[in-house]
Image (cartoon, rainbow, N blue to C red; front, side, top):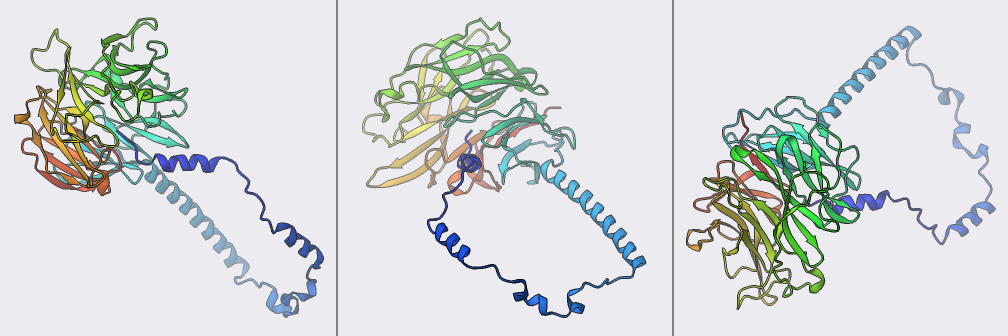
Length: 461
């Protein structure tokens, strides 16, 4: 998930910095001239020559009527204050949506610095809460997580979506500093636990949060290891287990690791993969080793017969492109699935970048984004959504028509709760939202736009 208003918030932080502009160079001349010129005498005021009957203010009402008018004014002022308070309260905290009566679920999206919901069954939209960004449903659809800006920082919030008039609950005592240039990754865990990527001492780390509580702190892992992209293990019927997957980076090595947040502080994490896939062919050089490895790992949902085996993990990373494919200025990303062995999923072998994989609810397919950037001589921006079996069979892949003008980072996607459709947000066209048929790849525009990633859930009973 990416935020698209970081520049505005950085500018606000800069403007809040106290600063006194230098005086204009002509100020001494102005002061010297005003010192030489005497103050205008009072008799020069035109008002002094007006008749007193004009200058003096005469009462417009007799005393009894004046008292009545004052009383009415006071009553009107009190009523206006009460009404304004109610209006401000309505604007800042709007009625929560009771989510248990939506057969196709609800879509949460961001627009105009507020979180909204869209019902795909009725096409009804509702403004849920203001001053909120990047909404993410809980697995049961009863709560909604979002970030609330607080100056240059952000406050993690949770809103109970089953109670009308519920107020958002802050999950920390103080706002957090989110990691720059790092996706706003968060994951719902068991019993209301959440994991979110934040910035600690300039490095991306994981904060463990809990709905209804205000204690937080970075995830303690191997000392000196940078951690991000948290993902709790999904279990049956959308619940979450306590095992937390994340990407760890230490020096030139990036690894996939898991840990139980309820462990003893001294308990080590489990390293799933110690192999670093070489990124030396990347355009950034050796100083970027590990930076673009194992990005945004995500567990597959539980599948029948997977007991005792390693749950597959999808991720994407930068590495060498196939022969004959010109490297784009920003990459050469490819999608991987790791289940003890590592394999690459290729939707379009000629694409410049393919990445950002998301599992479908059954764990049988992976949806990811594919981009072509053209060349310097013939630039071309096209984005596609690829839906591919987890085994990588290209003959069963579904690829949408190209979205012209959409480059890398211009698209974001999300699965429907039943796995039959996807949402596709196009930032190159003002946040247009398309609904995609997962079986055919056909697309249809929805009557909404979003300023950030969308989240689709089917509320549980």
